[in-house]
Image 1 (cartoon, rainbow, N blue to C red):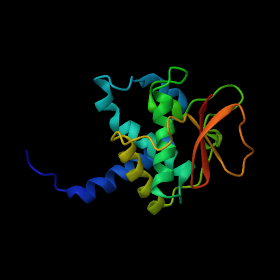
Image 2: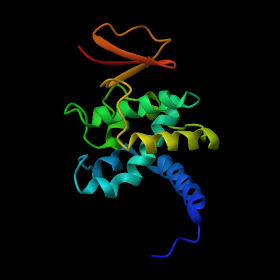
Image 3: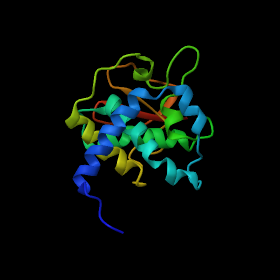
Image 4: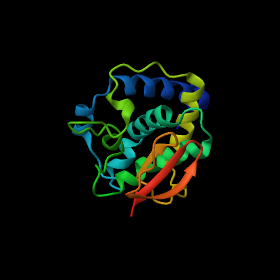
Length: 170
């Protein structure tokens, strides 16, 4: 098979642009139409979609943090997708809403500022690593909060990375 004309760097740039466009056009309702169970044959087909959703979540929740901080935020999304109490689809986990709130606060904002290209590229690299089955830095956490928010006493704290504290159920 011939190598694409774009080269690796060009393809990454094109994919990054598509991910940005995708993230601004996708609505939570349309995400629920294409659910896939992690580990199923459909998972490979959904990898670009998962990568786009996870990149957006890492960017919105952990931009400007260390790679470990970005990986940890992404890992929480994967941990939730593997927990039966949450949707099994990575994008559905991120865009999950109930009548009162969004699981990730930025999802509820109708207009978000455009991403910083450098920080978005960093988030995309972190998302790619998270989807490559790295060891879980969060020790099984399914929740996290900013260190400026009061503690969550009903949950068990697993680790603090950068300005996030990670938790799981007791």
